[in-house]
Length: 149
Image 1 (cartoon, rainbow, N blue to C red):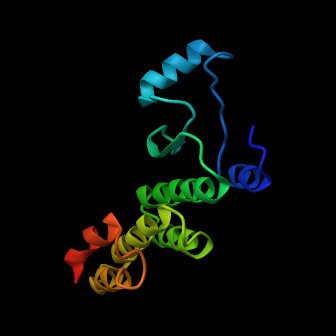
Image 2 (spheres, rainbow, N blue to C red):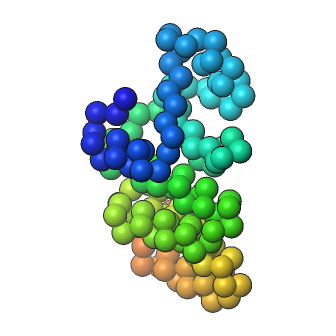
Image 3 (cartoon, rainbow, N blue to C red):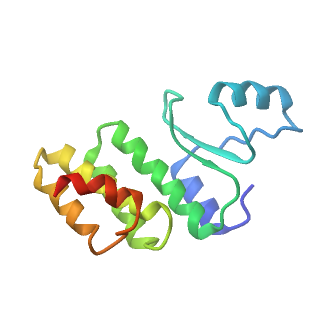
């Protein structure tokens, strides 16, 4: 399904992949498209065990953007399970492995929120806001974190 081994390996390690193709399985495609409001193909949905959507990726992306998007889904699912330490690790891994990717600024924001939720220490939010002075300064996520200074 995915030609790049980095994508295949990540998906195999973290997800149960299900492919619903508009021409091969049109009824399932319509049903799931309606259920999850999928407007375009490809739409990659990361769902938790209850079927709740935790992250979505629409359209094709190069591997250097696609893998961190998948990683963002893993982190968001951990956060939703209240595994804040695991979520923080997953968000920081995005920043470490893919610092120039689009999800990296969002990961920095949510890493700080995850640390705060794990510890209830507001200094985690302040440190996150200050971190945006060095990285991703012009991102929307930096603006969102600016209230924590």
